[in-house]
Image 1: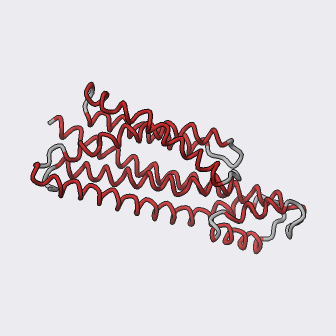
Image 2: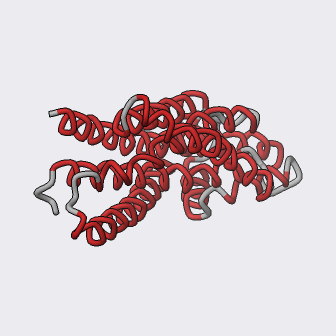
Length: 254
């Protein structure tokens, strides 16, 4: 099967796209709930913007493929995914409104609908019919491996980044004790940002006194910085997928 070049590069593309997608949906809910302070349901509605974009574009992918080609539709879809994640990474901040997160996700979702709808047929297009079952199963495996790797990579990246970004933000508070900053940094990473809402809710009446709101803001800003780095992982995976799709398109044309 892997002697078929479109199959080989198509599976690489599928794995990379899955890695980027799961990296995105791993890190964003943590940001929405812990940094922006959204409830679980509200965060779900923001993430549903991806589904809205995919719903709109998925139905049109077949018509576009007839006019362009399936590989060109995959390229277009992946380019939109890259653009959506890149825009989100650039705009992300601890004070942004929820709708500003949803807008790039719609763009990402449109790309996801286009790419996903045509990627499977593109990967299997040159596979002999007798091997189509094995080919389909292999592609499913590639997607599952990609999703697992994407989650692992972004989780590790986020944890490592928090150790730097949160400490840097806390250091900006004049006279803040280094030992306490290290403790808060470790606690923020260990709680995946859950500490932020606790400190924020205490205000000036908690154990940190008048510095409470400043500390909460510093933790939120540090988590937002780390989230941007995590989105960089998703973006890198999607760019790898886009490169694989370019190769598939060229092989199909040759």
